[in-house]
Amino acid sequence: MPSDRLQVEKSAIQNHLPDFAEHVENGLSASPKKLSPMYLYDEQGSLLFEQICELPEYYLTRTEHAILQNYSDEVAAFSNGNMALVELGSGSSTKTRLIIEALIAHQSDLHYIPVDISETILVNSAKELLQDYPDLKISAHAAEYHAAIRTISKLELEQKMIIFLGSNIGNFEPDAAKNFLCKVRTWLSDGDFFLLSTDLEKERSVLEPAYDDAQGVTAAFNMNLLKRMNEELDANFDLSTFSHYAFYNEKLGRVESHLRSHIEQSVYFGRLNRTFHFKKAETIHTENSYKFTNSKIKELCEATGFRLVKQWQDERTYFSVNLLATA
Picture 1 (cartoon, one colour):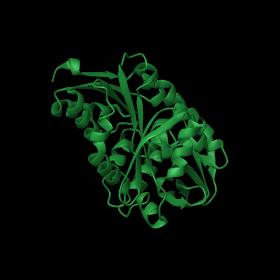
Picture 2 (cartoon, one colour; picture 1 turned 90 degrees about the vertical axis):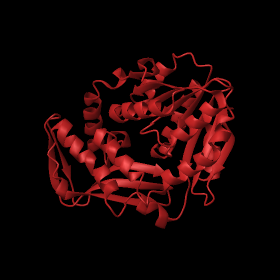
Picture 3 (tube, helix red, strand yellow; picture 1 turned 135 degrees about the vertical axis):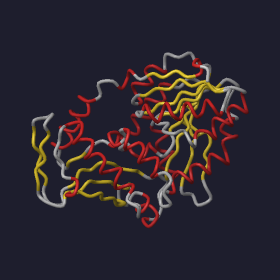
């Protein structure tokens, strides 16, 4: 495999520990206690999430994959013949292969720029892609979104499509989602596009098992955050005294994930030289997964300077893939 087909930028994620420590201290000092879902995705967390995507209860990945399988040719048709593909939160790039294949068929070669916090998954998936697609060039960025985009924005790209799959926008609070889309809009030029996938509102009986599966993989994914704090921040969480707790908050239109303490207890953090107290049944709020309606998607576009160019959904209207351009 020619080395000039793969470049990896990873300086943007160095020295992440102080940020994690500061975030944990602030989050566990808050009332109610909370932590950002971005910290769920260390190496182990990223691997567990890949397993979640294969679970029978987790309809999101299968449904999104089916939509892209059916409509990637329509997505690629928006290329002017030299479009670069920028993916935020690329993971193993499994679903992205459908867009990659469609774009290569449309324009013969492709510059793919994946961004992910996990360098291991990023590099492994990039090597697999390069073996399968000889007309592909990859500039991988092991970084958080904003840090990577600062580097990517310096690249001379004739046309680009930024993609944000997995309904990851649902992990943002509403105001943060708007701020994020506004930021993405500033990265786009005339003729560029933003492909955004969104999970749609549906019955509680479908939503809750997707975030609390029978095999306990989702629980392990959430509980891994306690392990991470033990290892990186010298905390002394007793994992047997906590459990994963997820439910659909219909009023707010989101599935909430928490780590719930079974007992009243104190947890000491050696790196912070600080103790945090937990009441019995008190939780750490670790993640929200907001669900959308068509009207909410349109409102989000209008509020952030986008226009909805095209929208694709599955037959059950479980999921939506939306092509956006600047208004």
